[in-house]
Length: 308
Image (cartoon, rainbow, N blue to C red):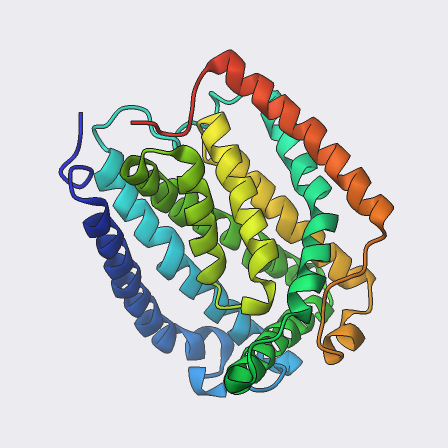
Protein backbone atom coordinates (compact mmCIF):
# COMPACT_ATOMS: atom_id res chain seq x y z
CA UNK A 1 0.00 0.00 0.00
CA UNK A 2 1.48 3.32 -1.06
CA UNK A 3 1.79 6.21 1.36
CA UNK A 4 0.84 9.75 0.26
CA UNK A 5 4.53 10.62 0.05
CA UNK A 6 5.33 7.57 -2.08
CA UNK A 7 2.54 8.48 -4.50
CA UNK A 8 4.19 11.81 -5.31
CA UNK A 9 6.19 12.25 -8.52
CA UNK A 10 9.89 11.37 -8.03
CA UNK A 11 10.94 14.96 -8.76
CA UNK A 12 8.56 16.16 -6.05
CA UNK A 13 9.96 13.56 -3.66
CA UNK A 14 13.53 14.69 -4.31
CA UNK A 15 12.66 18.36 -3.84
CA UNK A 16 10.85 17.51 -0.60
CA UNK A 17 13.95 15.65 0.57
CA UNK A 18 16.21 18.60 -0.29
CA UNK A 19 13.87 21.00 1.52
CA UNK A 20 13.76 18.73 4.55
CA UNK A 21 17.56 18.50 4.66
CA UNK A 22 17.91 22.28 4.39
CA UNK A 23 15.21 22.99 6.97
CA UNK A 24 16.40 20.51 9.58
CA UNK A 25 19.99 21.52 8.80
CA UNK A 26 19.17 25.14 9.63
CA UNK A 27 17.70 24.01 12.94
CA UNK A 28 20.90 22.12 13.63
CA UNK A 29 22.96 25.20 12.80
CA UNK A 30 20.87 27.31 15.18
CA UNK A 31 21.23 24.70 17.92
CA UNK A 32 24.97 24.53 17.34
CA UNK A 33 25.20 28.31 17.66
CA UNK A 34 23.86 28.10 21.22
CA UNK A 35 25.37 24.85 22.46
CA UNK A 36 28.89 25.25 21.06
CA UNK A 37 30.01 27.92 23.57
CA UNK A 38 28.48 25.98 26.47
CA UNK A 39 30.08 22.65 25.52
CA UNK A 40 33.43 23.75 24.08
CA UNK A 41 34.02 27.27 25.40
CA UNK A 42 34.30 28.63 21.85
CA UNK A 43 31.79 30.21 19.49
CA UNK A 44 31.35 29.18 15.87
CA UNK A 45 33.25 32.30 14.84
CA UNK A 46 36.43 30.54 15.99
CA UNK A 47 36.19 28.08 13.06
CA UNK A 48 38.66 29.11 10.36
CA UNK A 49 37.96 27.53 6.99
CA UNK A 50 41.36 28.50 5.59
CA UNK A 51 43.76 26.95 8.09
CA UNK A 52 44.24 23.77 10.07
CA UNK A 53 42.44 23.82 13.44
CA UNK A 54 44.64 24.15 16.52
CA UNK A 55 44.33 21.36 19.06
CA UNK A 56 42.47 23.62 21.47
CA UNK A 57 39.62 24.00 18.95
CA UNK A 58 39.25 20.34 18.02
CA UNK A 59 36.24 19.82 20.35
CA UNK A 60 34.46 22.66 18.52
CA UNK A 61 35.25 21.12 15.12
CA UNK A 62 34.16 17.66 16.28
CA UNK A 63 30.90 19.03 17.66
CA UNK A 64 30.24 21.11 14.56
CA UNK A 65 30.81 18.28 12.08
CA UNK A 66 28.96 15.70 14.13
CA UNK A 67 25.90 17.80 14.93
CA UNK A 68 25.53 19.19 11.42
CA UNK A 69 25.88 15.74 9.87
CA UNK A 70 23.20 14.48 12.24
CA UNK A 71 20.82 17.31 11.33
CA UNK A 72 21.57 17.47 7.59
CA UNK A 73 21.63 13.74 6.80
CA UNK A 74 20.43 11.42 9.57
CA UNK A 75 17.37 13.18 11.00
CA UNK A 76 15.90 14.40 7.67
CA UNK A 77 16.24 10.96 6.12
CA UNK A 78 14.59 9.26 9.12
CA UNK A 79 11.69 11.72 8.95
CA UNK A 80 11.32 11.19 5.19
CA UNK A 81 11.52 7.40 5.49
CA UNK A 82 8.93 7.35 8.26
CA UNK A 83 6.34 8.97 6.00
CA UNK A 84 7.53 7.03 2.94
CA UNK A 85 7.42 3.57 4.51
CA UNK A 86 5.16 3.71 7.55
CA UNK A 87 2.42 1.54 5.99
CA UNK A 88 4.27 0.27 2.95
CA UNK A 89 5.35 -3.10 4.35
CA UNK A 90 8.87 -4.19 5.19
CA UNK A 91 11.44 -1.44 4.79
CA UNK A 92 15.11 -2.02 3.89
CA UNK A 93 15.95 0.23 6.84
CA UNK A 94 14.23 -2.16 9.26
CA UNK A 95 15.61 -5.26 7.54
CA UNK A 96 18.56 -5.93 9.83
CA UNK A 97 18.15 -9.42 11.20
CA UNK A 98 16.68 -10.78 7.98
CA UNK A 99 20.07 -10.56 6.23
CA UNK A 100 22.21 -13.74 6.29
CA UNK A 101 25.33 -13.57 8.45
CA UNK A 102 27.50 -14.29 5.39
CA UNK A 103 26.53 -10.93 3.95
CA UNK A 104 27.86 -9.08 6.98
CA UNK A 105 31.30 -10.61 6.70
CA UNK A 106 31.41 -10.40 2.89
CA UNK A 107 30.65 -6.68 2.61
CA UNK A 108 33.73 -5.50 4.57
CA UNK A 109 35.86 -7.76 2.37
CA UNK A 110 34.29 -6.19 -0.72
CA UNK A 111 35.13 -2.71 0.60
CA UNK A 112 38.70 -3.74 1.39
CA UNK A 113 39.17 -5.38 -1.99
CA UNK A 114 38.06 -2.30 -3.94
CA UNK A 115 40.15 0.14 -1.91
CA UNK A 116 43.41 -0.22 -3.93
CA UNK A 117 41.46 0.40 -7.15
CA UNK A 118 39.78 3.43 -5.55
CA UNK A 119 43.14 4.92 -4.59
CA UNK A 120 44.51 4.29 -8.07
CA UNK A 121 41.46 6.02 -9.55
CA UNK A 122 42.01 8.87 -7.11
CA UNK A 123 45.56 9.31 -8.31
CA UNK A 124 44.35 9.42 -11.93
CA UNK A 125 41.50 11.78 -11.00
CA UNK A 126 43.95 14.13 -9.29
CA UNK A 127 46.01 14.32 -12.48
CA UNK A 128 43.07 15.67 -14.50
CA UNK A 129 42.97 19.40 -15.19
CA UNK A 130 40.19 21.71 -16.28
CA UNK A 131 40.54 23.93 -19.37
CA UNK A 132 42.65 27.05 -18.89
CA UNK A 133 39.51 29.23 -18.74
CA UNK A 134 38.43 27.33 -15.61
CA UNK A 135 41.84 27.31 -13.93
CA UNK A 136 40.61 29.51 -11.07
CA UNK A 137 37.85 27.00 -10.28
CA UNK A 138 40.34 24.17 -10.22
CA UNK A 139 42.62 26.13 -7.90
CA UNK A 140 39.72 26.76 -5.52
CA UNK A 141 38.75 23.07 -5.58
CA UNK A 142 42.28 21.98 -4.75
CA UNK A 143 42.50 24.53 -1.93
CA UNK A 144 39.17 23.35 -0.50
CA UNK A 145 40.18 19.70 -0.60
CA UNK A 146 43.56 20.49 0.95
CA UNK A 147 41.76 22.27 3.80
CA UNK A 148 39.55 19.20 4.32
CA UNK A 149 42.67 17.05 4.51
CA UNK A 150 44.18 19.40 7.08
CA UNK A 151 41.11 19.15 9.31
CA UNK A 152 41.14 15.35 9.10
CA UNK A 153 44.87 15.26 9.83
CA UNK A 154 44.28 17.45 12.88
CA UNK A 155 41.54 15.08 14.06
CA UNK A 156 43.76 12.04 13.61
CA UNK A 157 46.74 13.64 15.35
CA UNK A 158 44.79 14.21 18.58
CA UNK A 159 45.97 11.81 21.32
CA UNK A 160 43.89 9.79 23.75
CA UNK A 161 41.03 7.31 23.81
CA UNK A 162 38.39 10.05 23.84
CA UNK A 163 39.79 11.55 20.64
CA UNK A 164 39.79 8.09 19.06
CA UNK A 165 36.13 7.61 19.98
CA UNK A 166 35.23 11.04 18.59
CA UNK A 167 37.02 10.23 15.33
CA UNK A 168 35.26 6.87 15.01
CA UNK A 169 31.87 8.55 15.44
CA UNK A 170 32.56 11.68 13.35
CA UNK A 171 34.66 10.20 10.54
CA UNK A 172 33.41 6.62 10.32
CA UNK A 173 29.97 5.96 11.80
CA UNK A 174 27.96 9.14 11.16
CA UNK A 175 29.00 9.55 7.49
CA UNK A 176 28.28 5.89 6.78
CA UNK A 177 24.88 5.98 8.48
CA UNK A 178 23.70 9.39 7.26
CA UNK A 179 24.86 9.07 3.66
CA UNK A 180 23.47 5.56 3.27
CA UNK A 181 20.10 6.63 4.66
CA UNK A 182 19.95 9.50 2.17
CA UNK A 183 21.48 8.03 -0.97
CA UNK A 184 20.69 4.31 -0.82
CA UNK A 185 17.72 4.54 1.53
CA UNK A 186 15.94 7.31 -0.40
CA UNK A 187 17.58 8.65 -3.57
CA UNK A 188 18.35 5.25 -5.10
CA UNK A 189 14.86 3.96 -4.29
CA UNK A 190 13.26 7.02 -5.87
CA UNK A 191 15.28 6.55 -9.05
CA UNK A 192 14.50 2.82 -9.19
CA UNK A 193 10.80 3.67 -9.24
CA UNK A 194 11.37 6.53 -11.68
CA UNK A 195 13.61 5.01 -14.38
CA UNK A 196 12.43 1.39 -13.85
CA UNK A 197 16.01 0.15 -14.16
CA UNK A 198 17.85 -0.71 -10.93
CA UNK A 199 21.22 -0.58 -12.69
CA UNK A 200 20.60 2.91 -14.08
CA UNK A 201 19.29 4.05 -10.70
CA UNK A 202 22.39 2.74 -8.94
CA UNK A 203 24.78 4.55 -11.29
CA UNK A 204 22.77 7.79 -11.24
CA UNK A 205 22.44 7.88 -7.45
CA UNK A 206 26.14 6.96 -7.17
CA UNK A 207 27.04 9.97 -9.32
CA UNK A 208 24.83 12.23 -7.19
CA UNK A 209 26.42 10.79 -4.05
CA UNK A 210 29.87 11.69 -5.38
CA UNK A 211 28.89 15.12 -6.71
CA UNK A 212 27.23 16.20 -3.45
CA UNK A 213 30.59 16.01 -1.68
CA UNK A 214 31.83 18.89 -3.88
CA UNK A 215 35.27 17.28 -4.07
CA UNK A 216 35.72 17.04 -7.81
CA UNK A 217 39.31 15.81 -7.68
CA UNK A 218 38.01 12.61 -6.10
CA UNK A 219 34.78 12.33 -8.08
CA UNK A 220 35.46 9.04 -9.87
CA UNK A 221 36.65 6.91 -6.92
CA UNK A 222 33.74 8.19 -4.82
CA UNK A 223 31.39 7.34 -7.71
CA UNK A 224 32.84 3.82 -7.67
CA UNK A 225 32.12 3.67 -3.93
CA UNK A 226 28.56 4.84 -4.47
CA UNK A 227 27.96 2.20 -7.15
CA UNK A 228 29.43 -0.51 -4.91
CA UNK A 229 27.17 0.50 -2.02
CA UNK A 230 24.17 0.74 -4.33
CA UNK A 231 24.58 -2.80 -5.57
CA UNK A 232 25.11 -4.10 -2.03
CA UNK A 233 21.85 -2.50 -0.90
CA UNK A 234 19.94 -3.70 -3.96
CA UNK A 235 21.23 -7.27 -3.86
CA UNK A 236 20.75 -7.77 -0.11
CA UNK A 237 17.42 -5.99 0.28
CA UNK A 238 18.77 -4.17 3.33
CA UNK A 239 20.48 -0.87 4.01
CA UNK A 240 22.71 -2.19 6.79
CA UNK A 241 25.27 -4.18 4.77
CA UNK A 242 25.87 -0.99 2.77
CA UNK A 243 26.30 0.98 6.00
CA UNK A 244 28.83 -1.62 7.19
CA UNK A 245 30.72 -1.53 3.89
CA UNK A 246 30.75 2.28 3.90
CA UNK A 247 32.03 2.36 7.49
CA UNK A 248 34.71 -0.18 6.58
CA UNK A 249 35.83 1.98 3.65
CA UNK A 250 36.03 5.04 5.91
CA UNK A 251 37.92 3.18 8.64
CA UNK A 252 40.44 1.64 6.23
CA UNK A 253 41.02 5.01 4.57
CA UNK A 254 41.77 6.52 7.98
CA UNK A 255 44.16 3.68 8.86
CA UNK A 256 45.99 4.22 5.57
CA UNK A 257 46.17 7.96 6.32
CA UNK A 258 47.61 7.22 9.76
CA UNK A 259 50.19 4.75 8.49
CA UNK A 260 51.51 6.78 5.55
CA UNK A 261 52.88 10.26 5.13
CA UNK A 262 50.00 11.83 3.19
CA UNK A 263 50.79 15.38 4.18
CA UNK A 264 53.83 15.51 1.92
CA UNK A 265 51.96 13.99 -1.03
CA UNK A 266 49.06 16.39 -0.47
CA UNK A 267 51.45 19.33 -0.72
CA UNK A 268 52.44 17.96 -4.12
CA UNK A 269 48.84 18.09 -5.24
CA UNK A 270 47.72 14.48 -4.70
CA UNK A 271 46.73 12.51 -1.67
CA UNK A 272 46.33 9.26 -3.59
CA UNK A 273 48.73 6.42 -2.88
CA UNK A 274 50.42 4.60 -5.72
CA UNK A 275 49.30 1.02 -5.05
CA UNK A 276 51.29 -1.60 -6.98
CA UNK A 277 49.40 -3.31 -9.77
CA UNK A 278 49.63 -6.58 -7.85
CA UNK A 279 47.73 -5.00 -4.92
CA UNK A 280 45.02 -3.71 -7.26
CA UNK A 281 44.64 -7.12 -8.95
CA UNK A 282 44.66 -8.94 -5.61
CA UNK A 283 42.11 -6.52 -4.23
CA UNK A 284 39.85 -7.05 -7.23
CA UNK A 285 40.11 -10.83 -6.73
CA UNK A 286 39.07 -10.41 -3.09
CA UNK A 287 36.23 -8.09 -4.13
CA UNK A 288 35.07 -10.58 -6.77
CA UNK A 289 34.96 -13.38 -4.20
CA UNK A 290 32.97 -11.22 -1.79
CA UNK A 291 30.62 -10.13 -4.59
CA UNK A 292 30.04 -13.79 -5.48
CA UNK A 293 28.92 -14.43 -1.90
CA UNK A 294 26.49 -11.52 -2.09
CA UNK A 295 25.15 -12.72 -5.43
CA UNK A 296 24.56 -16.24 -4.12
CA UNK A 297 22.76 -14.87 -1.08
CA UNK A 298 20.56 -12.73 -3.32
CA UNK A 299 19.73 -15.71 -5.53
CA UNK A 300 18.75 -17.73 -2.48
CA UNK A 301 16.52 -15.06 -1.00
CA UNK A 302 15.34 -13.62 -4.36
CA UNK A 303 14.99 -10.22 -2.72
CA UNK A 304 16.04 -7.00 -4.40
CA UNK A 305 16.33 -3.62 -2.76
CA UNK A 306 12.89 -2.14 -2.40
CA UNK A 307 11.46 -2.99 -5.81
CA UNK A 308 8.12 -1.74 -4.53
